[in-house]
Length: 348
Image (cartoon, rainbow, N blue to C red; front, side, top):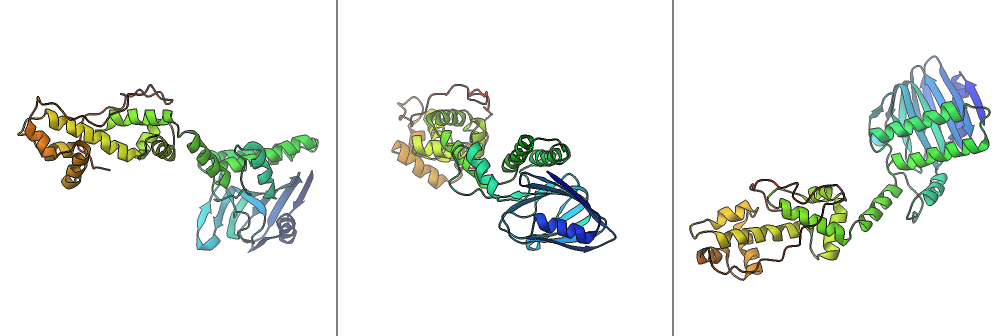
């Protein structure tokens, strides 16, 4: 573990270039200060500039994070103008991509390590294992909680682990590996997409289908979407789509149309001849009468107006079979918990 401290601009530029050869810093002002702590392949530089310093990071295989404590850092990569203030931690640029920006009267921490170690962390910590090299795909943390977690981890390493001259090699290595794991958990990267896809596959079974069908049966009169169905059964929209395609041979919205068509059929069977086909179709979300009539004829063998003219009390045509209600799902929502009063809706 090594600590260095400089107050001149020339020495600071040299300090930064040593750890990140592709990072060049230029600017003006009275003073630029830097303090470095490094160990286990990780370097943490605390910079304090009194005016404006620009940086130009060429593409490299380094992960370079900036945590802002005072002032502002402006990311100008590719012509954008994204400003980060105190409390923000972000990636200068994804590895192998260039980045530019400015430090404006800023006090910040620059944390740098080799991007190759992310592959090692992902191999040990993720299931399934990545099929190729891990790539960071975004510069901002996923959300405010991720930003706080990443910044807190950087601060802990800087102020507790690397600042302790008596810290053992094992403590330092563990701390560095923890930071690398937090980077994968908080910044957009290819392992997050892979894990999400794996969860979608795991959640596409018949249990997901049964819960989704039960939710649709209880909420067919509402203007529901695939996202609503997925949220009700605690899976992603993609998992719901997988489940319907794999086990029902249709889509979630295709099944919703079938359920609504069955309800419209039941009302036509029970209605008196003076009832309106248009009103019943509209109530169940069929805004286009020609499409409703075509779908109805395909399902029941005659026109909806013919069913209405036959009058109540006749033998009803057999509606499409509906699934039995499923038990309470993993979200703790009973199948009838989302029932609402009928309301017109737009056919999906």
